[in-house]
Length: 315
Length: 81
Image (cartoon, rainbow over all chains, first blue to last red; front, side, top):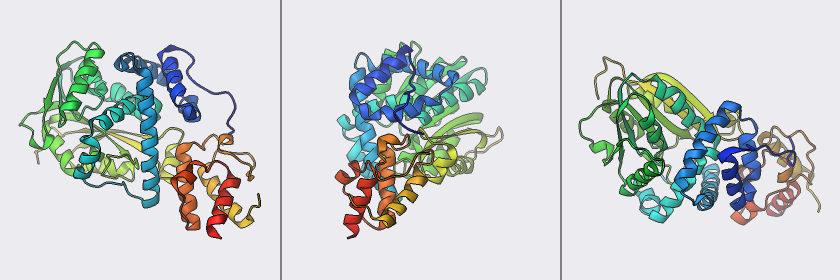
């Protein structure tokens, strides 16, 4: 396949405007974004448009600034990629290290979160995981359910859960006051009217509560003890309830400390915590097939839906 | 620009693995913009595969400039000399 041929981009809607904004601040990304959308079907594009509409609202008139933050994120990840390819490991391995470099740096965190918001559109695996959550996880729930998200990040998963029919109570836990403020602001910008309990809680010190469903997306790779985290989540899910676990494989980033080398590693962790595996999605990075991503150790998002057996005992 | 044939052959072998959808000619004039899969992320992956194959190390500035096969072959030959 040669470059320089017709460039395939969505040609209308909110996504078109966001793409133009992104390319105006990051023209070198044209080829990548072309690959991102060249094989997208109508169903995927409809979901992308829905997501783009929400994201445009969140940018609140500052789409160009978010696009610049995305460019910075892409360049930051590239540096980590270089380190990862050379050493076969992530740069950092302890929470304390990344706490100083990333989490305690508010300016860094803001750019990081803004960039990640746009990655929901520009990184195919991120879009696919979000779609899997909306189309497979949420509709598979019992008629009425309580929901918790631990580490809600940009707040979109929590927004979709709050909007799902039958959701009677929505809770988000985070260890960062800044993250909680961010999610609260995102929900305000999206016009979410139902109450969402956003609480400053460390999952490892959580009060005894139980939920019908829990989301834990892109958190596992930030933890020193992912197995302990999954056992903790298992205890927080009601018997018969479900968890949505999403973690990237071979995905170097400034704050990733636990390296999973295959999607099966992630599935095994979820199973070992006691969950029955209901469904999985292995979504490779933009432009790669799953086979190619495995062969070259490229990023793959591993999303796992686990169910806690009705007769299960807690850890 | 004089190209070391052995270096170029080894480079091409690596490039074929990474850019497996490219079906055009593999010549020293081949540029990143000619190959659909050759984006910035692939440049880093390519650079590190070349480093490992030739037991050399590129600087960050060099990696950014690794955008055509002939130039890469030339830099590799200089580093190996």
